[in-house]
Length: 127
Image 1 (cartoon, rainbow, N blue to C red):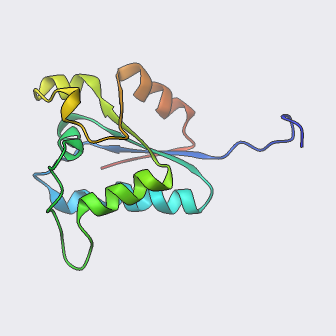
Image 2: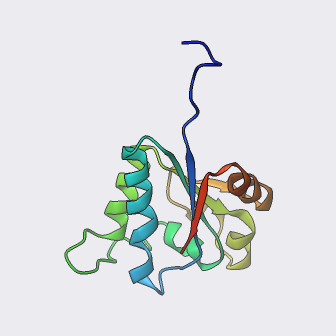
């Protein structure tokens, strides 16, 4: 199959602004992104504002609601599945979280990146 014949995967972007203070809002982007991956889509999750608190080492290790696994387990599954996860540079600076405090597998990116991700996405959901 030539490059011209290759069909580009549809892209979907999930923007997470909620942080660890609202645990009921933390599962959706990971579960939806893993579902998108299973549907052969190209998902990404961009965390900004309080959302970056979710990506701090140890922050979600014990957050668990109902019969669901911990948020950490769901996040690890998403990363293992190949979901691209971004942390907003400016949001990390705003809340005083050094980049070294982020879990492994996270790309730190600024405003231009999120704008590009939104423009390239076939769909965008905000949490």
